[in-house]
Image 1 (cartoon, rainbow, N blue to C red):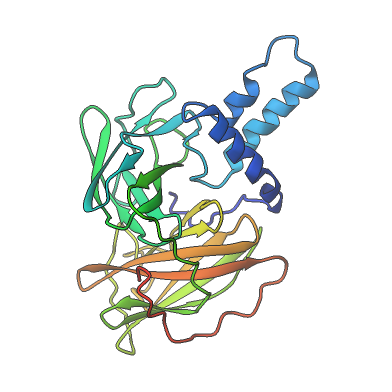
Image 2 (image 1 turned 120 degrees about the vertical axis):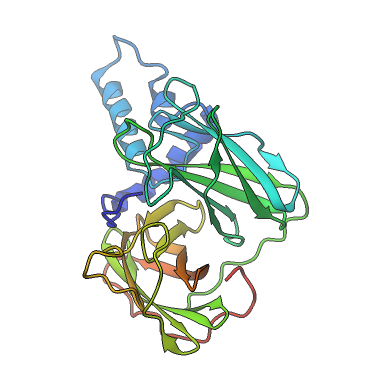
Length: 321
């Protein structure tokens, strides 16, 4: 999670290796990375070509979007339970294991928190951005609304003390009961955030290119110009790719109190989609003391950006807006 806001560095060619990298991660289990799986048979007399393959795999791992693997850069997301009963206040507990296999207890504060936990069902419903509590033994815990059964993805976004850069790990969590997956909502430019709040998005994702997205917030038809800081920003945007839930976490341009960034109605973000396809975007913003969420489906195109989706009436099917 970087305040620099620009999630650059993803290349179009990454799309070709996603399936392979994720497959290796699943095969070797939560305590091994892609690089470790490839390097398992490495020895002093390995041919130079094999050594190059190992280096390539390690480079590919470091360039993958966040959240695709349970272990990366020596860190592992270890859920206390991989399956739990459905409930509106379900306890989710986990540890972040460091390179030495012991729980990490030292973290750098980013956007007012030491760790950001994102929970969402695999059909993109039930999105939650929460901040768990850390116990002395390195166990994080949070109460999460998991009243809808199904397969969930849990993302831990953090920066460990002494580690260069942030890490986002992902793990699956099964919630018992009958899973009734919802289809991905169609792209629209205006989303309902409840209680008269509407958010309109302008901009287009283009695979491999840095894209500018602007989200304008209004209430009862009037522009909101007094947004309140939430986690040291006027808004937070999470994007998940359809299919594998590759995780992109971006922040807006500027910050509260910098003398140039207005408190609404528009919040501008910069993000790079690693591949073409559909993405589900979740905007968190705070106004009048309440944090709200607006959700969008936005396709990433190849080549020149498509025409911005025209504003339409917001969805009314109750899919978590």
